[in-house]
Image (cartoon, rainbow, N blue to C red; front, side, top):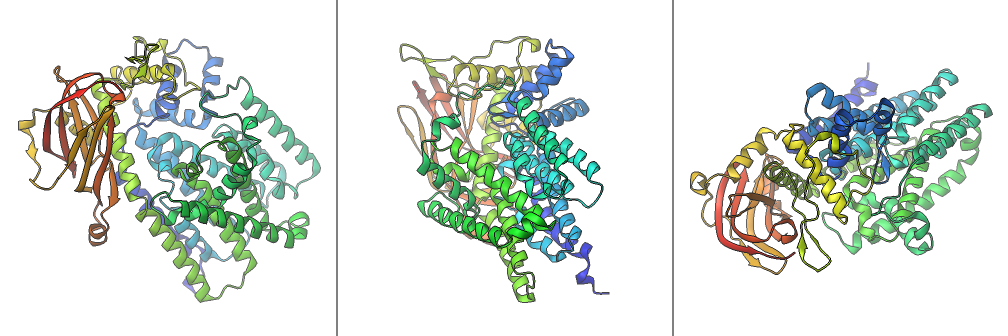
Length: 594
C-alpha cells in the first residue's frame, strides 16, 4: 500500500496550518468586544432577555438590522452562548466563527473526494486558506460570525446542491441552508444567482422553486429595511463608473496584498493588474469550457459557483463603496473573500493542467506555504495593535462604564451628548441601524449598552485584563519600575491631543493584552486607559525568537475628543508577559477642547 496515495494521509498533513491558526487565536485573542459587538451582541442579548417584547417581537429581534446587515445567525449563536454560560464570552464567539474556516476545510476535502481529484490538492489549499490576512475575522466576534460563517454557508449550499444523492433531499437542505446564509450576511442572497452552474443538473421545476425562494428570502430581508446613515446608496454611486471598475478589479486581485505590510500605491496597482489578468483568464477558461459548463455535470460546477459569488460580491462592494478610498478594499475582514477567490483560481488552474508532474506539485505546495508564512509575517504588527486597542478599550469601559466621546454643540463648545442615562434593562432598545460615531444618538446607545453590561454583570474581564485594570489604578510606588533607558519616549502637547514618539521603544508581545499603555488620571483618581501604537515589526528579534511577537517604534496621538476637560496626571506603563511595570509619569497635562 502506498501511504502517500491515501486520502486521509494528505488530509492529516493539511491540518498543520489549521492547528497553527487556532493556536494563534488562542494565544493572542482577547475576550473583549469591539465596535459593532456592543450593538449586535450586547444590545441584542439585553433586549431579548429583558425587553417587554412578545414572542413574535423576540423572533423578529433575532433578525434585527445592524448597519446594512440582518445577522440572524450571529444572534442565535450569541443567544445560545449566553444561555449556557450566563455571561457573554467573546472568545467563545470568536472560536465559533473561526470554526467556520475548519468547516470550509472539510467541505473542500469532501469536494476533492467526490470527484476523485488529486487528494494532495488539499495541502496547498489549506495553507492558503488559513492565512492571517483576515485576522479581524478571528479576533472580532461580529466579523468572525458574519464573514467567516457566510463563506462556510455559501460553500455548504453549493456542496449540498452538487451532491450525487436524491435531488429532492439535497434541494430541500440547500434551501434551508440558503435561508441561514441570507440572514448571516447581506451578500448571502447572491448565492441564488451564483448557484446556477450547479442547478443546470436539476429539472426546471427546481429552477422555479429556487427563484421563488430567492425572491421570498430577499423580500423578507428587505421588509422594514432602513438604509444606514453612514452608508452610501447604491444608486447614488452608479454614475462613478471609473471608480467602480477600478475597485472591482482591485478587489479581485487584492489577495496579493498579503505580500505587503503597509499601504502603498504599488499594492493598489499590482492588485489592479492582477485583478484584470485573473478576470480575463477566467473569461477565457469559461469560453473554452462552455459546452461542459452548460451541458455536463462536472467538478467545474462547484468552482464556478464559488467564483460567481465572489464576482457578485466584488461588484456590489464596488458600487456601494465607489465614493470611498480604494485602500478600504484591503481591510482585513474582506480578505477572506479574496482568499476564497484565490483558492478557486488554483482549482481552476489545476483543472486546466491535470497532469501535474511532481516538481510542479511541490512548487504549488511551496507557494502556498510561502503565502501562509508571509501573511503572518506581514500582519503580526496589525494583530497586536488591534488586540492591545481592544484591551485598552475594555479596561477603560470597565472602569468608566462608558466611552467618553465628545461633540461640538451649536455654539462650538465641547459637549457630552452621548452620556448614558438608562437605569433599567427593559429601557434599552434592540440593535440599532445607524451604529456610527458620527451621530450622538448612536454614541449614547453604545454607552447605555456599556453601562448596563457592566452594572448588571453581562460581562466580566478575563484574568489578564482584570490584573491590568488593577495595576493601572494602583499607586505608582507599588509597581515595578521599567529598566531605565529602555523606553525613550517624547511627548508633545498639541491643541487637540497628546502626541507621542518613541523611535527606540521595543516590546515583546506574548499575549494580546501586552503592549504600552498611557493612563490619564484626574484629581478624583478616575482613570482613562489608552494603548500606544507600534509602527514596525522588530524583524531582527522576530527572526531570532519565535516565542512572541516583537515590535518597535511607537508613534501616534491620543485625541482629547475621548477625554473630559481638566488637569491630568499621565502614567505610562509597559506590559510584557502580563506583567506591568511603570515607565514614567507626566505630572501635569491639561486637556481642553477636541
